Structure formats: C-alpha cells, structure tokens
Length: 115
Image 1 (tube, rainbow, N blue to C red):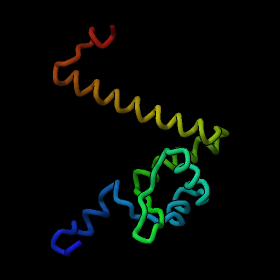
Image 2: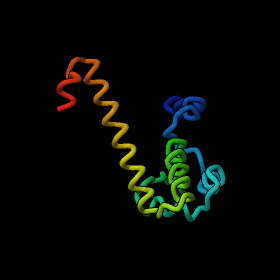
Image 3: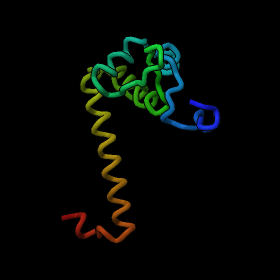
C-alpha cells in the first residue's frame, strides 16, 4: 500500500478491530495458551486475520471475546458451551441496543415492546 493511502499508525492502534497481536502475545495477554486460541478459532468464536506470512493476528475486540471465553472455561464450562454463551450474550446485547434505538426514534413504545 503506498504511504499516501495508509491510515496513520495512531489510527490503527486506536482501532479495536485492527489485528495487532500475534498468537503468542495474544495468548500471553489473556493468560491462555496458543492452543486455546486455536480452539476458539476452530469453534468459530473468533477468526483471526492472517499476515502475509500466514501467521494469525488478533484484534483487541477478539482478545476481549477470548478473555470472556477463558473466564467461562476457568469456571468449568466446556469450551463449546462457552462459545455458545458468548454468541448468545452478543446477540442479546445487539437486540437490546436495537430496541433502545427504536424506542428513541418512536418506532417501539413500551406497550408494543411488552406484547
């Protein structure tokens, strides 16, 4: 990418979706093993981007998800169940956000939301 089309480095560092972390560093940051991160990828909870050399790269957003999965697994939840829980939590958060937006815009009233 020519220098004039690259976003400034500070913009990339502030971007939660920028794949800034190697597998080793990501695992270290969440206190897990690289194998745990691979398992999350196999379960399709997170899909790391690949560098030009084929190495996995993780974003801060993905690390937050991985840390939540690790928390659940540490509490005794099987990894497959932990992934499902996180997906459902994310879907619930999205639904609540959409409902709030609709309420603010007048698209949903308290009465119609309850029925």
